[in-house]
Length: 240
Image (cartoon, rainbow, N blue to C red; front, side):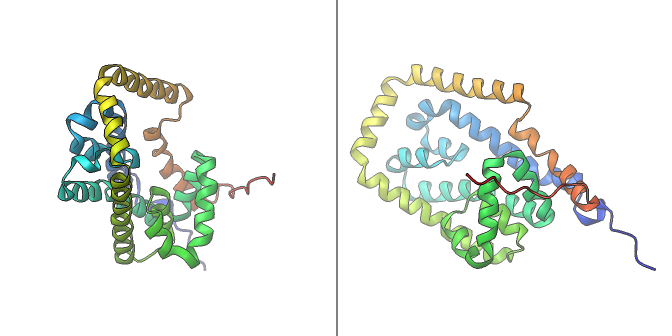
């Protein structure tokens, strides 16, 4: 007599554990939106706080010459690395469900992620070093890359990214200083515009019902569907 099929609750961690994974990601999303709203003020008044909220390339380049090496590499490395273990864990624990969930939620990103998945078997280590972003981390977890190996490669790639941005900051130090002076002079108008843009974006997301934060709640349902066999296979993109 064959054993009964495994239930979804025994196949993946469950909603309580999923909440522990996505809560920090949600907090980082909110921090990123805060940085996008307030960057015209923070880039000059508190550059360290800016990259603590969001370590986007443009912010790192703008502030690299305003920070000590210890602050730039210390805070920059921590902020860039912070979301990666959570996306790796989502991939590790939810596997195909996490990939299909991401693919359905953002089709364009999904196609990119599926391409990364196809290359990962042969080029996994270089991909993590060269492109240590959220989607690569998700695929790394789903592929069951050894956590220690992932961590080492991810740290190397992140420090390499910061080093590259520092070189760019050094080469273009003059133009960057001019941009920062312009931002300082027009700080209030730029601040009003940036806050308005973030607000408009949020309103648009609310109206479309596709908020980034709400999208994470779909993952557990996707995992249940995978285990129950109800989730249709991912469709290949149409040829041009």
